[in-house]
Amino acid sequence: MRIKGNDGYSFSEFETDRSPLAVHSENYYEMDGGYPLWFGWSLHSICRNGWYFKHSNTTINSIEIPFSGCLQIIRNNNVHNLTPGMAMILPEGEENRLTTPDASLDKFAFGLKGSLAAPLIYSLFGDNLLISGIDPMAIQTFYNRISPLIKSGKRQNIPAMNGIGLELLFYLASHVNKMMPAELSKAVQILNYNSGRKIKISDVARECNFSSYQLNRLFFKYYNMSPKQYLMQQKLLKACALLKETGKQIKEIAADIGYSDMHIFSREFKKRYNVTPQKYRNHVVSTGKQRHR
Image 1: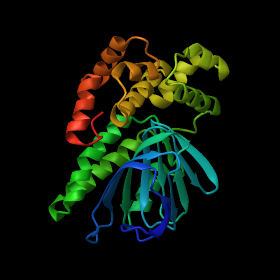
Image 2: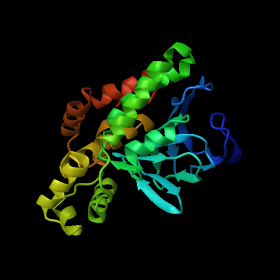
Image 3: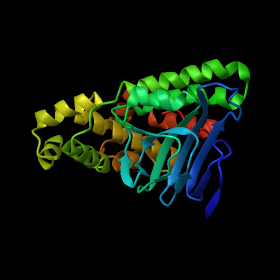
Image 4: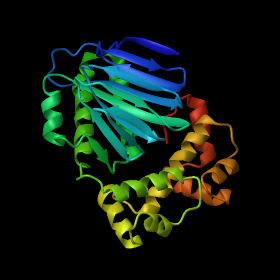
């Protein structure tokens, strides 16, 4: 169902279809207290295909970060497809549209405003508002730290809230790189869309006109990990989404992300998250929150 209105936080016009939303947890602190820099908004949502959100003349700078799935952002008549490990900063005062081409998108977002927001963003990022090579779990940690402070609405939490927000900005700024080569972007898309299949890195390299050595070197440059490690990360992020959002058995989920042996999948999952898939699912069900991955 299409909805039009004004944001409660930024007071700007928006248009959206929220019916495909599965999870929507939004936190904002309404009063900025006259601060020149203000991190007062955070969001975690899981969206189905068909969801979109259109901002018009926003008065808040937002940071959009997919955790799993593809987030498509249209700004300045350009289409950007963000996958896990990427982020985009959307400056205030411009129109943009967010949607997803995937069956499911799990994303985080943060907002900042104030007279120092735009100058700080420009000094840290310049025109490089599309960022790659970040760790999705680090972003989740930032969300888990700042959201309770925002939600509390307590003025004594403002310094800590803004401190965490600045940490997030500097973390993202540390991952600003030169424009990613188009061939590497193609390799990333191939790995993302084949995360549920058995795929050889050498085949991906060949498809993108790289040697395996060149592809490996570029992944370390832009993502600080090998293509194999990146593919493993995408598989396990997809497994987290399936554990949260479906009632599939563990062996079915293992098969969905390319594991023929459930025990090997469980071992890799525990190695990364320090918990078994079943305990992870139990935690999600018992707490009713989809935040611990």
